[in-house]
Image 1 (cartoon, rainbow, N blue to C red):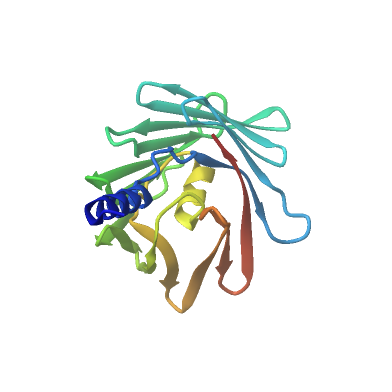
Image 2 (cartoon, one colour; image 1 turned 135 degrees about the horizontal axis):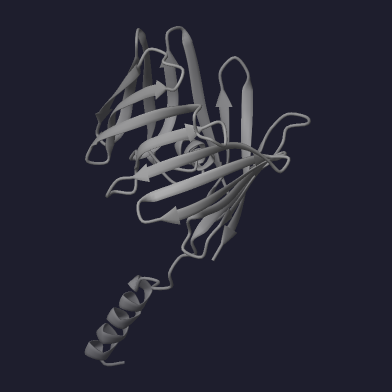
Amino acid sequence: MNKLLLIAVLITAVLASCKKDTTPKPICKIITMTPSGGGTLTYNFSYNSDGTLSTRSYGTYISTYSYSANTVIATTTNGGVFSSKEIITLNANGLASNVRTEDNVAGTIWANTLFEYSGDELIKSTDTNSAGDPVDISTFTWSGGNLVSITSGSSISTLAYYTDKPAQTGDYFSVIQLTFGYQIYRVKNAIKSSVSGSSTTSFSYNFDTDGKISSVSVTGNSTTTLTYQYQCN
C-alpha cells in the first residue's frame, strides 16, 4: 500500500476511535430510598414532566408539591388528614430563600427559616416560630466549593469530602435535600465525614455499573445504609 495512503487510513482510524459519543446520557432520578433495618419504611418519590418533585411518601405520610413562579407549596397529609404545609420561596438560583412550615390549617402555628447566600453558598439561616422561642441563627463556612463548617450557638460541625468523588444524585446531601423537597446546599464533592464535638459520622458510597450511586452507608454509633432505585429517561 502507498505510504501516504497508509498514513491517511491510520489517521482516519485514530480519529474514528477518538470521536466522542454524542448520544445524550439518560437523566436518572431516585424513585425509592430504603433505609436498612427490619420494619423500616421506604421513601417513594414521583416527578413532573419537567423533572420537579411531584410527590413524596413515607408510610402514611404523603407530600404533594405545587409550583407557581418562585414559590413551591408542599402539602402533607397523614392517613388522608392534614398534617402540615410548607411554603417554599426560591431565589434566582433555585435555592430556598425562605421556608415557612404551618402545622395547622389556619396557619397560626408555624415555624420559619430564612436562608441567606453568597452566590450559591449558604452563609446564614435564621429560625423563628409562632411560639416566640428565641431566634436560632446558624452560620456556614465554605472552602473550595464545599461546605466545611456549620456553627449553631456553641455547637460546631466540621465536614470533609471525597476529593475524587463529585457531588451527584445519591450522595448524602442530595438525598437529604430530596427528602426536604428543596435545595439549600450545592457542594462540589460528595461528603465523607462530619465531626461535631466527640461525635464523628462517616459516609461511604457504592456505585452500580453505570456509575450511579446505588447506596450510601452512614456510620456513627451505628450504621444505616440507604439503598436507591432509579428511573431513567
